[in-house]
Length: 203
Image 1 (cartoon, rainbow, N blue to C red):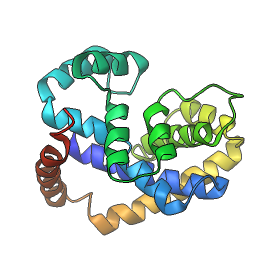
Image 2 (image 1 turned 135 degrees about the vertical axis):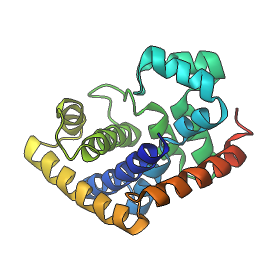
Image 3 (image 1 turned 180 degrees about the vertical axis):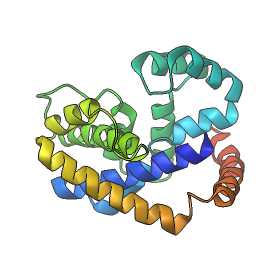
């Protein structure tokens, strides 16, 4: 679903910027870019290997679970998060952000200190926020709360950051007219064309 992918990427970008700025983990513009690009590997697989990728999603679900990522690596040589990291590194994104993207589906465990670990948990929080934003916040908080606790946030602070992330996403959505069917269709067409050019050398 190209429109949903674009909306989720934008929501994750907003959430990464808002939460990252509050926690002072990295420059806000870098975090926004990181959130926006974190799911590029998924778009790459869906664009260049649609049938095989669709089969894996049907078997293992749509989330970046460990089983799905392992099967992607076996089938394609890289899983979607690794592809995102490869593309980001090739475009000059800081290594620490690329590494955080690669492992944010299953960040290093609690107690493993380090800035990359914090950034991975931040991206996991941003991804959870994006899921909630796309359903108007009416979903379970478990995954987001786990990431929030890893970052030292309580439930109240997490909800505040979620509201601010949602508000920023709404502003961007209106600016980009993502909610308009015609605009979404044009964006999907441009995304497919650009993706084939950008991803073909990696897969």
